[in-house]
Amino acid sequence: MGAVTNEWGQRMKCRFIAANLVVSFASVLLCAILVGSPQQAGADRAARIREAGSKPTPRASDGHPDLTGFWGEPQRFVSVELSADGKTRIVVDRDAPELDAGDHVRFKARAADRTLKPPYKPQFVTKQREQMYTASRVDPGIHCYPLGVPRIGAPTEIVQTPTTIYLMYGAESSNEDMAHTFRVVPIGGQHNKDRDAVPDGDSIAFWDGDTLVIDVVNIDTETWLDGDGTFHDENLHVIERLTRKGNTLEYDVTIEDPTLFTGSWKPVLVNPGGGVLGRLGSTTRLLRQPGEHAIPDYPCVERDREHKVNNDRF
Image (cartoon, rainbow, N blue to C red):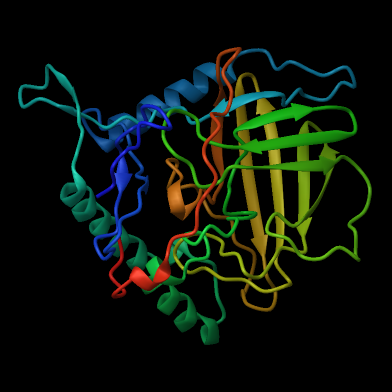
């Protein structure tokens, strides 16, 4: 299960695999860098952000910060462990049973932590939990429906002009990514009230000082906010804020749905590796080297849901 095809080159073998599939599919496992301890990894990440943020902030010809560039997570997602004596770092290539066991632990932790979910009104909590436990069959992202805003998270690559911001989403390295898409967002203007709802919504942008604010409405109700059954309705409103400081890009997202939520929600990214869960949440990205770009990937091909035999989660 989870075989890597030669046709599309050498892809990372970091995958999470649904144990309940008769015919398997492979998607991206979050392969965090495990160096010493989670505390040490967090300190290393913060240090990289501080160093990159201390650089001068370039500005475009119109005086605004220049957001153009290829932006990636501060940590590369390669699974590394220390040897017993602490002197050797070992690159880990785990097989399906090991990956699946770890994913079950993470799923249980997510299910127990209500702070990772929107503040649903009481009458909607049960629906979210039911969809979370059956998501391996009913998640629209698994069946290749576009993940949509805000599940796609922060952009991977940006091209900025005085009147338009181009946002691109894709893999940062050689692993697969579920969110290959792009958005063309006008700076200024009004929402199109006659436009049909689409997964990425209707976006307009404006500058608030040195921060670019993107206002998104009219998001297709078939999309989820993440891969854990967090649904929304036609009143979903997403506000994204992009702020460049030196060679860092701060992405902040606020989500509102007055019909379903008791208040606004500001999720923080917990799944930098992406995959079917998406990359929902605020985060900070670093500018990659000149010449680096988002890696093209093959289009998603819908899986046959009739091969799903139970509700086990990966």
